[in-house]
Each structure stands twice: as C-alpha cells, then as structure tokens.
Image 1 (cartoon, one colour):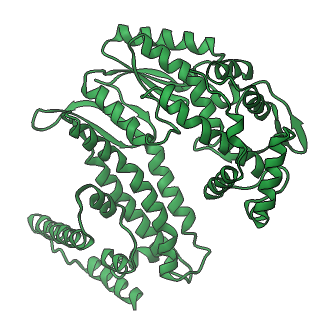
Image 2 (cartoon, rainbow, N blue to C red; image 1 turned 135 degrees about the vertical axis):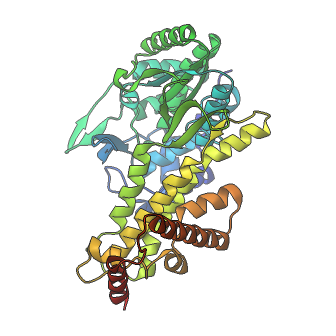
Image 3 (tube, rainbow, N blue to C red; image 1 turned 180 degrees about the vertical axis):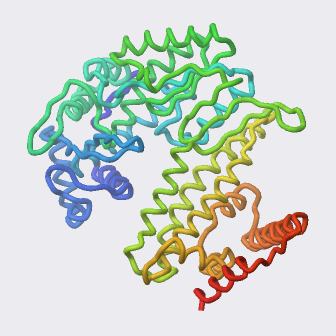
Length: 470
C-alpha cells in the first residue's frame, strides 16, 4: 500500500506550530544559520506563516547540517549533524505524518528502536523470551558505520515502494543531499543520514526494515534496536545459517557487519551485552535450578560513577542541599533504566512465561554505587583542603542517616521502591539492622581470635572522627 498526498498534509500552520513545540521540547542547539529555539519562538507566528508560504510555493530548500562531535564511551568521537530550526520543524512534521502509517502497515514487531510504545523494555522482553524458550545461540551483530553509510540511491528506492508523492520524496532526498558544514566548508555526500536529524531514525528503520522481513522470511527470531541487533537460534547450524542470510542481505543494502563488534555466542557458556546490560550465561544455583543473570554493563556502571564524579568537583563550594540536587537526577535516570529489566521479566511472566532470570546482583552494584556517591559528597562538603583522609574521618558524622535527612536518593532504595514498593523508612531501618549485624559479627570475630574489639588504634580513629565532626 503506497502513501499518497503526503506533502499536502504539511501545509497547515497549526501542524507546523505543533511540530515546533515538539522540537522545543527536545531542546538542542541551532544550526548553521545561528537561529535558536528562543529566537525563532520570539516571532513564532510570523516565522510559521513565512515557512508555510515557502512550502506552498515549493521554494523551501533544506540547509546543510552543522557538523559537531560528541565523545563516545570508548574515547572516540561520534559525528552529529545539527539541522536548522526550520529544517527540524519540517522533518518533525514529516515524521508525524509518516510514522503512524509505517507503524500500521510496514514495520516488524521485533524492531523496537525509536518507535512509539516500544523501546528498551520491549527489547529486553524479546531477548528474555527467546532465551527462556531455548534459543541460546545468539548472533550479536553491529553494522559498520550505519548512519554514515546508508546509500542515498538505495534508500530512495526503498522509500518509493511505500510513498508515491513525488514532492515528498524530493524533499526527503534534498534533506539527505544537503551535506554538512565543517570548519566553514560544505561537504557533500552520496550516503548517510545525519545523526541528530529528526527524520534520521525513521529513515534508518525504513531501510533496515528490509533486513527485518528477510530474517522473518527465513523463520529467524531477532530483536533490533536501530543498527544494533541480535538473531536467535536453537542450534549452532541454524545460527551460522542466520549469519550468512544477514551478511547477504546487508551486502544487498550496501552495508557490512562491523566484524570487531560482532560475534556468535553460545549462551550456555558465553555472556553477551545489549543496550547497556550484560546477559550472564546459564548456570545452576544452590538449589540446583538453572538460572541466568542480567546486570548493568560494566561501561554503564563506569559511566554512572563518572557522572557522579563530574558533578562533585573539589573546586566548588556549595551548600549541602545544592550538592545533593546535582547528583539526584543522575541517580534517578540510571535506576529508572536499570529497573527496565525487572519490568520486562514481570511483563513476560504476565504473558505466561516462567522466569529463570535473576537480577539480585543489581542490588549489590547499586549499594556499591551509593557508597561511592556518599564518599564523593563527603569530600565535596569539606570546604577547606578536601581530601580522602578527611572524608574517612567524617563517615561517622555524615553517615547514611545524615544523607537521608538531606534528601540524597539512595539508588538501592529507589530500585527496591520501584520493584517491591519499599518505603524510605523501611530502607533506613533495614540499613540500621545490617549495620548492627556487621558490628556484632566483627566483635564475635575479635573474641574468637582472643582480641579486644575496641583496640587503642580503633579508639583513636573514633576520637579523630569525633574531633573532625565538631
């Protein structure tokens, strides 16, 4: 089924204004013309009517994107293309028209990236469902330079299968071929959709939709999030067949696998990573039951610590509540992401699948991250010559109870609250009981060794902490 009269649906000032509001909500900087969201909004009605008139007379021309680079977690830099505000408005309007149609008639259910009502939780559900169903051979694939290497000619050929409106097709092609400005020079290209463009995720999904249905045609299970995807099979032979089918289709699309980031995994003995989580292979627990674990990926944990560190520099002098307000949004964001795996398990259980997935290790990770956050804040609180030694001395005064009193959000509590409904009071009491048990165990160990628990050295440390807290 082809889409007709798409361009005519752009020609309404109310739709363009609604698209501007979406662009504004997504924030971001301006493009090469220097226009910002704030300056465009200052004369919004006039700007929208002027844009509408240029669209009606077909005088509107997309501008080159502004090339900027952002750091990646591996130390490299990722190129982004920032369109002008007007180009973003038009792209958003096209997405608003095309996306619902493609959702209804085109996209595969196992494609979950940049799609309404899907996302990471849906991806985790699909992965867990396949693992629990015995699909333990996994092709963990990544496409080499995907967004930079999509051939414009092939992409337009695919779009023509679904859109018959020549004006709309011409407009999309102009966006693709507008190029980018870098160091004052205009760079042209015959491939790629700029990361940073509003319409790029939709075009990427349309392009890789060809791969999705090819895998489906061969009876292969998969999950795809943008250019990262997993293919599942029950045997080594079937997964090798999947590798061949995937590479052949990608070659047809003018793309190739990033071999260094791609591998075949036997989940009975090997782990794999996807979307910031590590899926740890099948093992047997103490009760003899087969289980597998899911934990945050090591890079995600490092990113958590790095963000906390950047928000708690020793060079600033702030009120304690201000320090807490700097780190709480980071904690909320990370925990909200980590809890998605528990949400996915619950959703699959409601659909009738018995779960063997264990997430308890996440608690220990979050408890450790909480200790790191408190440590960073103690150092930040010490205004005169902050140091790790002074931080150690302040632990008895600035303890768990103190941080709760100034409304620091413990990531472990937030996780337990979202998963089990634990209140902050219950969490505080549990922490007290754990501390008491550790204290009693420490005294018992000292007695068994024939030693005094309150040694002169320990008493001196307690006195130092008391002196430091006065």
